[in-house]
Image (cartoon, rainbow, N blue to C red; front, side):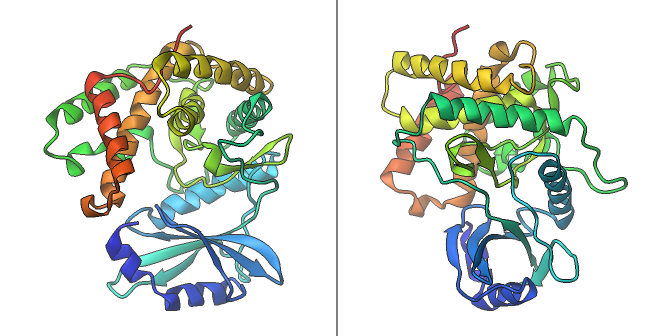
Length: 330
């Protein structure tokens, strides 16, 4: 989280939000990278409270996210239920000292448990379940109609993290390669079977696993994108987390293993997008760019440790060389 937002987010703001949602004062912080996320309690029942500064999302964007999430929940996708305030409102707005605002939403806690990448559960059965739930989400979303007259979630190219000039203006090669990749993606075909509203960030930190199914949360990055992106992101972060120090052959072997089980699960509910294998590397490269941007945005240079600086060097090298994190073989 940016330092100035940390300063703005006071305990008084949190306490007022807890009162508005009729929650107990005991909280457990779960995360604070892009949003402040807490496990909270109502009559002993654990729930998840997310608090967003308006520099990250407009209220209308959050409303669009919640409208879609509610549709998914009511149509059998494993995702959180939205918990309203007593007056039925889904979002609590709290002013900050500088005149900006924080927006709070409350969700049910999904079933299952987190899966660590070094766990024995990080295996082919999980990869299959992972793909199956994403395929179901894509299928269900094809029937979704946004609220008439309401704001929509953004299109993929409107992502602020693609405004790379703002984050590293002195890196012309990265800026040029980003623009070229965006232009190449714009040339891809779009139709109802390969493009729509997607989660856009379903890595292993954004779901729980009950041993049979995954239960997805954190829809904050949802946008209109190619379905292939929702296939690329799980692979990207699996490689990023598990195979950082592996050689290229080991990465490629894992990618083949992962995708063979993931895509089999995906096809239970939805056919794989046409030419998805040819396009996968483009979306892996796109994630390198947005990750490089978000690290520059959220973490000041003086706060970056040696490990993060090494990660940034590796990502920068791939972006400049126009390489994906892993070589995908047909």
